Figure 1 (cartoon, rainbow, N blue to C red):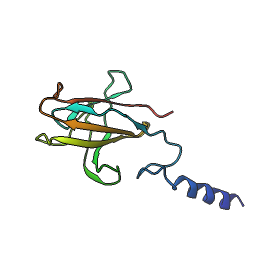
Figure 2: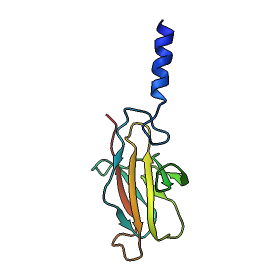
Figure 3: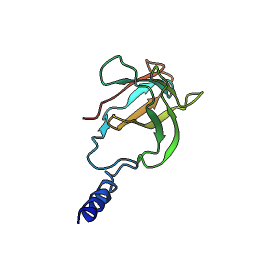
Length: 126
């Protein structure tokens, strides 16, 4: 009986939250307003602190967040770069890492943006 219950619970964990790669119960954070920058590069910080979020997976996705177009991980200083040259227009970034809530961010790349690079935040999972 215990084995059946454990298998049933294991099956529930794999059902997903509608976002590929994430299981139920994970708080997915999505920013409503797009960020603006000149490039798809920048820094990821832990919450609103100045602490660098090293080892965070940064993925550029399609508009429905289902297909990953390119990806990288932040270095120890929290820096990432997804492209050597700027690609103007709207981009969809997904940030994830062990111990953090997955974060969905829209970014508009424009030569007239005030900031050259992005400063993003990822929240600690509770």
